[in-house]
Amino acid sequence: MEKEAHEQYEYARRRLRQKKILYFHFVLFLLGSLFLFIANKFFDFGEGTTQNWCIWGITIWLFIFILHFIKVYITDRFMNKKWEREQIDRLVALQQKRISQLESKINEDTENKI
Image 1: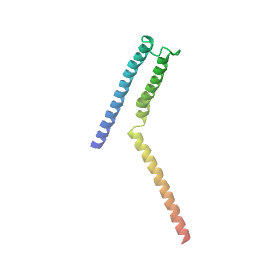
Image 2: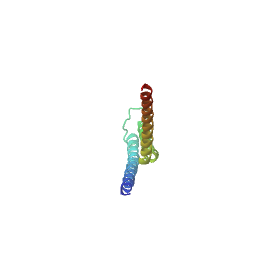
Image 3: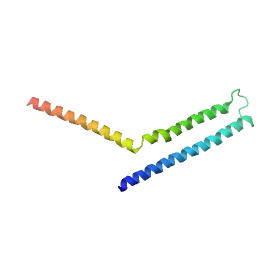
Image 4: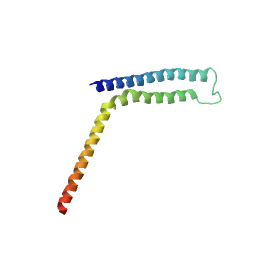
């Protein structure tokens, strides 16, 4: 029971850390986007370009943030330790089934030769 409680604690600690990093990424995205916008509009940074370059930068950063959000709230929620254990158990069962089939085939072949 103690091992299970420790695993639950470690899982909760890891999830909390992931969410904390995601929130930090969101705040950094907001401040960075504001900085890029101000640099483009008020300080004429990138003045020689005809396109609004800060929109491209903010859009790319937003896409990266959305991927981070999906990883934390969707992917890691379903693909946790329990899911890993189930997949490992399923693969081990398939391997054992295949081994038993091969052993029975070998036994049949040796019986037929005798």
